[in-house]
Length: 102
Image (cartoon, rainbow, N blue to C red; front, side, top):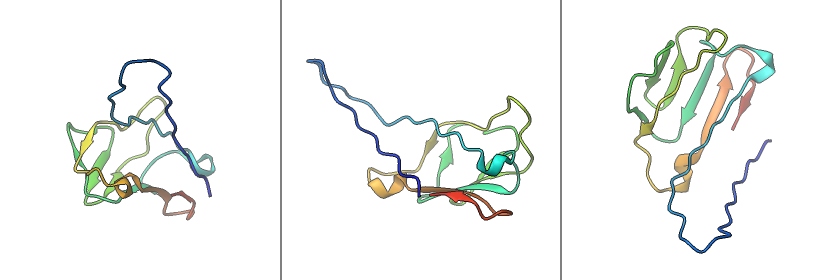
């Protein structure tokens, strides 16, 4: 199990007011991101703009309809989450190999 903890320490005198912004890049078992990979969210995300490159939000999942080519990505801001920490729970899984990150 891989556990990622975030810790921010304010070493200055001014208040830090920010939202969490993460980049999570996964390549599981050296397999290219494509139709076998999905990202499951604890909530039903809504894209703030089209994802492009074959990515689509369907219910609680980000699915890929085509394999990403070199230098391609699927990205956008999402809404639909709450302040509940459990909304940060997500699962990246390759349905074909069964490998995943939770």
